[in-house]
Image 1 (cartoon, one colour):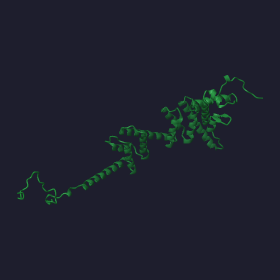
Image 2 (cartoon, helix red, strand yellow; image 1 turned 180 degrees about the vertical axis):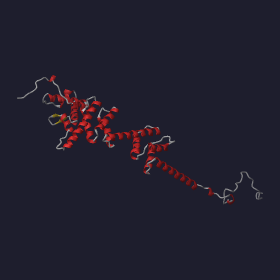
Image 3 (cartoon, helix red, strand yellow; image 1 turned 90 degrees about the vertical axis):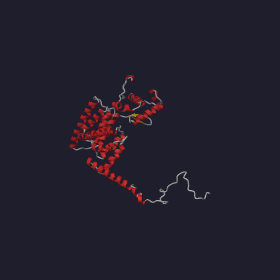
Image 4 (cartoon, helix red, strand yellow; image 1 turned 90 degrees about the horizontal axis):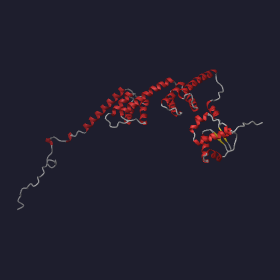
Amino acid sequence: MRIKDDHSIMFSDTHVPDLFIHDMMPKLSGNAVKCYLFLNSVAANGLRDATRADIADRLGITEEAVDEALLELQRAQLIVVGDKSISITDLKMLELEKRYRPITSSRPSEITERESLSQERERIVNLIKMTFFQGIMTFMWYDQIDRWFEAYAFEPEVVYALFQEAANNNRLDGPGYASRIAEDWAAAGVRTYDQLSVYYAKFLEKNQIKAYVGKKLRRVLTEYDLKDIDSWIDEYGYDQEIIDEALSKTRGASRPSIRFVSAVLKDWYEHGLKTLEQVKSYEKEREADAGRGRRKSVLTRDNRGNFKEEGDRATGPEAGYDIRMPRIGEIEPDDGQNE
């Protein structure tokens, strides 16, 4: 006995998972969305043979557009296109497989610890949902939160702080901005909320130094300038006091540059200078060495010994410059030969 639903397709409904509406639909083109909804409607009302020409005619698009839409849906793992059929992916099962892995065996202590951790994470996730999404958070955020927990081992409070940072910058339209922040925190070794507090203290101090450098040099800092300043602080370990000493070297320059300051600080770092006192002592000694070099150069160029005293000065033809030249129009004495 075959059981079928006897109702008119005119008043039927097509169920589409919220996973598609919230997570997949914003990423798809218009033709791909129309094609996916049409395929779901056909599947919900029984099997049916349809060619690409049929789909193009029903949707009011070209056959080439149908091919592109089907390829786009297949890349998004929404459908599987075979030689003679098209299968629609079960999004709920796909999401379930991504979220949960089978556990073969665990000790009782591990089970208790995992349950406690899971409850704390669930509490934070619900708090994030109610605080930043008014109780409606899309599935992609749930998946992203799970990844942050697993990949970076963040404490739940750190994940909440991550959303707070993104919200403060009005960047909760997608996970991209928050993901970049999470990568920065993880690269800095942040795992706990206490570590995050230390990180932010250093972060604020670094921003203050960058603003101070820009003000001293009277310029808007570029991305490369900011990376140079990061190296002064992170690699060289210099604070604002020593950086200010390097900035003072640009006094009087019409167009002071970050490159010059970087060269000065690199020189100090390579000479093992750590404190302001060491820097000042080093610069004072170098200026003294430069002064001695200038005085030595002046003595080398002294040519006063190249001239003889007045009494020893040679005269006559060998001297050259002591011979008197005849005056123009001078009459020579008559020797009697012209008579």
